[in-house]
Image (cartoon, rainbow, N blue to C red):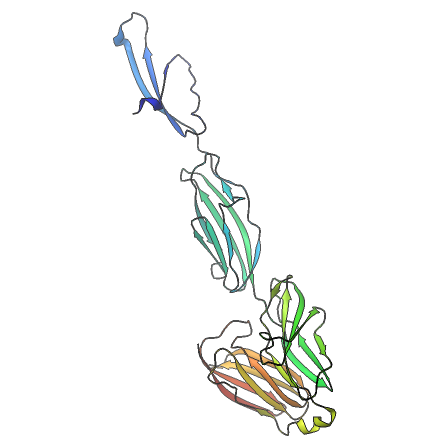
Length: 349
């Protein structure tokens, strides 16, 4: 035992010993007892004992606010030691941490040292619990809620042309999950992917579901798609693009198809997008639905009324929730009036 670490004193009856200094968890003390009566040095006894400062448990210094995450989107990452630290320890003990999710299938929680990563896996809610342990019997616990949502795109996009004006319409998303729908963004292009190669974009308030594209030239082909904007700056994937031909007044009758037709998608096999063309000879309600090989519906491409004409849509290989489908054979069925046709499509990874 190192003498410099021992406090020495002569004991007296009723003596009170002070706690060790704040930066010293424990301290060894030497007590020498003597009768001090006859001067006999043999009447002296030494004892050493340890005084330990009581442990103070960690405390929650800065709680984490509830948050909303996008399924398969950016993770929530937080260094719980970074200022402002989530936990502090009055004794300056080194803390160890653990994290737990109440619903790991919805939101996973992983700690790497002091860095917490929360990932949204499926739609729903979970509670993330963080625990700090000073390894001396003291703990502190805090939790926060995570809501995992899907940024659903608009549905049932369609377009009609009258002379030099195209009117684009759509339906709101089937669900806004935990998000607030604020706007739509319309993408217009003469390329087949207007989202990637837009010539024009237009922001439309969430109260409207239509857009007029004016001053167009007969004979031109235009492609349109629409996204939904949530919570200020969170944008959904685009809905399936639609193509429309701008025709002059004298060309309309010549361009009307004479029969219903669902053409084979191209390319086929495909990854991840493929183009679907279909003809409508008379005003009809048209549905085109994608099924997996077991007959389960995975995606409704269109389900709306169409005027006579030829139409093109692009499927991005995603289901109705916006999630990418696995490779395999899929069936596409078109129904319009008394017309029904089914074609096969092969999605490759």
